[in-house]
Image (tube, rainbow, N blue to C red):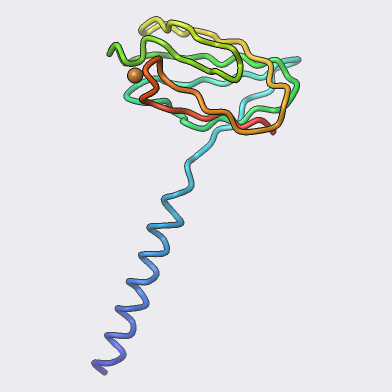
Length: 123
Ligand SMILES: [Cu+2]
């Protein structure tokens, strides 16, 4: 009786550990929406980039709309080095960044100070 309780507790604990490590690791990514000849996606800037991972289809002109709600100086700029973008973001006003993802891959982007990060996955 006591042994089975210990065994069950141990299994539950192992389950929790697995869930913690594998369940939490998956960062949610959001796929851009196709709109005619282009794809669009919105990223909210508020204490970070949300969603932090976005998925784009290759060779389709893309409009990433940044909506900066966070007035802290940190998010004044957004830098997407692989797409040649470095731009100021206005506060509480959607700002569209146009990119044309040519190659499949994963591309990091960041705030102007390289403190907060987002990721673009091109498929
Ligand atoms: Cu920053």
